[in-house]
Length: 545
Image (cartoon, rainbow, N blue to C red):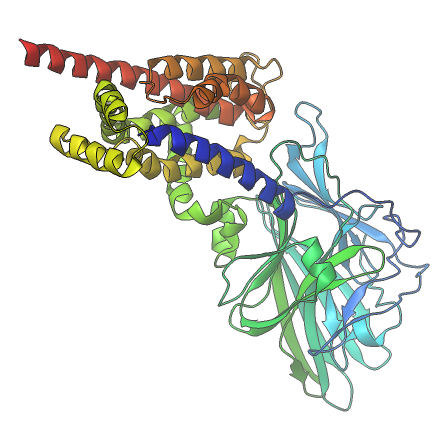
């Protein structure tokens, strides 16, 4: 019988290739296309804003350019925003603590209203909502054009509008120190003689024509939402273009995701909110929410609001804002393993103050914890190697009679007390842990621009000199030479011989943090193999004595 381990290894390669193809389908950004003429610059209000007209449908209306609208700038200790007084929308968001390129000194701009639009809108729709009844959306009045957080104190920015029908609306943005969470609140005073009916909505609009140069490991860029039935569900740009989402849920949230960063609207969690999507002829994808209808009696005041987040995928911060919002740090189906591993990685990094060293330590811990499985794996492989001469004799004896050959081999396994699957099962048990670590290193924003030392200045990007991939390939070659070769087929043997080279080239474009983890894991495996095989040889010598 040929080695089950080699078949498992070859199968793993096939599965890896299929997973990569599926990643390209699920996560790779859409091809770049030329924006249409209707896309505008940041200084001009959008001409095709999506404004929800009612709870039953979403209507795209044309908004004429308002000459007297303007931009106001807001600066906190972590954010710099631009808000258009037309609609009071966030049309630009810059994350001051994150550089666009490492060492550039240029803060990362996540939202902007240029050709590749990405903005956050909110307003009041419904029967009397000013974003529905005012042509071109309302233009708010604000006391000044620049607001800056001072001495770590909360910052409040109030925008005011009084409609011709008698609604007086104050839209308030509240910022807290060292936080990417923004409270957006509405105070509506009904000065009409009859009751007023309004609904708050919040939505994220992004051009679906994004850069497709995502490298070898594509990461998801698109929308996501949460309901009571689906805690975390992706809804990519193609989904939005194909069909409008329309779900009602208690609480919930909507978000736009990209590698390391996220923006999200979180409505009141004790209310029944409607989640929706829409798509424009200009290629803008929208995901948003509508709160329940708010009925305001004549000459009374009512309030409504939601939370807006724009910033890094900080699991601790996101978890505090809404249930399942931390799942936007997408560890896939192994999140229940990845999350505690990430917590452990954080604790180690807090002690050593270096993410590269933390990766090395957690790899040692995980490999050490799995040593009993590793020992069982290599012990079984060694026993299988010792049976090769007897298996060759059986093959000569029974020739092409496969049924008798199989029966004889099973009898040999029983007699020698060898489990042919003993080398495979430990690998299968370890694989989820190794894959979970892989996703931790790939998805964690904490590793973005994290410096290890020497030539490795960014663990989230590839090794600029390919030193780690070459070292990883050498370690894999050493492991291959130390591993008992039980494969008899010459073609399979040749394939196995080329695996270190193939993996070395494959890892050239992997983030250096991932390659570091893989290299250290191989080094530890080599040490463990030497210990295990030395122990087996000692047992064999004692048995002969």
